[in-house]
Image (tube, rainbow, N blue to C red; front, side, top):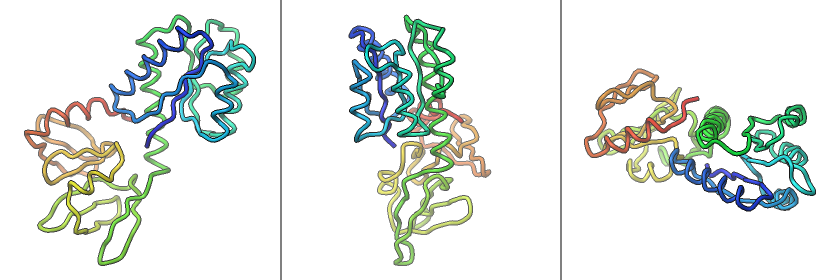
Length: 239
């Protein structure tokens, strides 16, 4: 899932700095995102005509249309939007509460606090996404096309000539390679060896060269995969 992250500030330097921070955080936490900078509330409103914003970092004290007004419009367009206000004015706290603000960042922005809030925002989005909405995985089983909810997949394992997709309540057998399936899965899936892909949301822990699943299975992490698996596991926001 690719997120639209909006950053709005009418101070050019602040806008550039905040966009850079967020771009670096998206890379660090492997978040697929379009990060769009706006220099006015009006520009955000125009973008909303044809687009949805998932996370918004908004200055409150904008010329013309205020950050509070923008946040209200964002909420109407997407009730799940996460709005983070960047401001030097604590007195706006009540107004921010009325538009369901997720958090505040005081100017000048502390990069460490921004990182903590960014991580919490991604955890929130993953929490909602993993439980409610997933793009379906289209498979062919017994010559019948089927749609599988990716949020229900625990892991995929290769057995003989077939790949077995193990969900919370079923096992699906398909003649498709692990490599092919891996290329069609969402970002929370991770290949840990030649024969196994796991859903990171369903991993209980990683111990040395083993991945322990919440459902009880234990898989060995391939030697050539270990470095990337460890990195992805540690970076994955656990909700």
